[in-house]
Length: 489
Ligand code: FCB
Image (cartoon, rainbow, N blue to C red; front, side):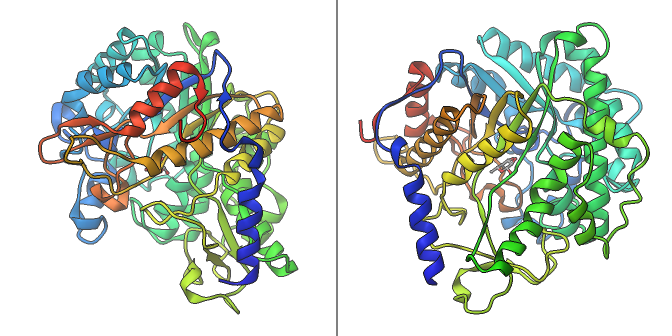
């Protein structure tokens, strides 16, 4: 570890000092929820007329997902949703965030709707409502119908219009039951992991296509948001988007590392917040990427569609990033990636480094100050828009103990620390209105398959038996009391 790594770790650990340890109270009307996503939990990928998605194709391709895992049977939520919703109710949650699989509703991405798919979501939503929770659907959590990928995928402009068509079908079928809508989950992952880095479906390595995908995802968001606000009941619908913005920290105070941060921040964060909040792509980002794309995919009127005001903004946060201008002088053990045309398009010369902080079992460094920074930054960038932490949580190699429990103390500590960061950000005036833990259940963790467990409820993948982990019991206490107990209590 270099000296700069040591000092930045120490500084960030100290930053949230005042929130550590003590009991902390959240407002009465704070929403406590849990999140899931269709492909990660449902299984039944060919049931009742569902069409294939890019994740079915990708996970069936040898070498793409660890251990050859696929979306079958996942945690069989398609059949076990009554039990799962009952478990969520038992935790005392106020809201359940899930996603609606586009290929269940429109098996070919467009055209005739599949009534059986809509019926499944109606049953699910009714079960959530009967359990006294608010259903929070996301329209796109990465399962693009394969037929649309075959027609060009998100780099093709038409996909944005097909997404608006999907939104209309869902609105007409389910709109009377839903208040809070989310268009996209983490478009950065869809565009950059899917089309540049290739670690996610559809697994393409085309940097220019990733930039076109970014724009068409944002356009799809804007078109779908307008559709959701139209029609009967439209005025009372609250529409938002979920972003995985993160803090990008410099490896050192050297101006070259500071400049590296500006560039990485541009393609991770500002390429989304610019169009959404200011109606323009940042000039420096377009200049940085000019050798890859001329942004000719942006047409007249697009940016006003994209920048229509949001009713709420979701934040997914797991870890910050740390970037250096070069690998010079950095212990190779601390270099995460770089120099290989990774997900950060146009940043091939930069190096992403670890800072030597403790990590979860997926290898992600733990630093809740990054969440504080993301919240306070977004609160300033889109003033007055209610913020929700739509995902936050940790993967640990949980085991069922001899006593039948799952004693995941590390996950409790992770969530506790991050909730303290949320609370501290709220103390600065940031309008955070809720927190959804990722995830309700262990599930299919994308390219990691079933090897990474994020649930506050354990799933035995052989028997499909569910067991509430200690973190689930702890989270239920927090949701029930609105208070974080003192650490160790
Ligand atoms: C987020 C995804 C979610 C889950 C967590 C761990 O990026 O939105 O589906 O995989 O990471």
